[in-house]
Image (tube, rainbow, N blue to C red; front, top):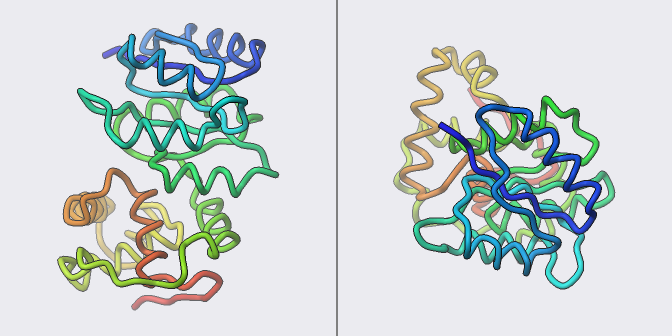
Length: 226
């Protein structure tokens, strides 16, 4: 099945470069380009897309606000957003994740990683590297609000599911979690799927944010599980 992609970036050369890389793949199709967030919303009113590759720093409307509006729901359902950032814009990347983006990459990512990320996002998963997830959330913990607030949805989780969510929030992959709790990786994947369903979350990025907001994880603290 072909993955339809819209590229959003205010630099024409960047858009051209991304289009060249994406168009070289038989399963990817660039169905539109936009020069900023406002333009992206207009483009996505006209074309259907599965993934939006979204820059953050753009004039008129930045990628964070565009992501927020896209993920708020645009029938027949919003495309998934993969935001791009640089090392000095981590705060914006975090804001984009909270707005509903499925992950982010650095702009200097190798082409093969960008292609793999688009495919992962299109399948419903996230592409935020575990180490970056933890560092990002620890650094910008002050943006999580005035303090942790227990989310009533958390009461639906079993003790094992809370344990798995804690490890997800610490940035561990499914394979690493499986080794930590001594179960098969497929079992961890099943647990993660149930956690997302119970918490009504789209992907593990949102699960990480909720774990921090609810106080399950304390930024900067070392947390151990049995």
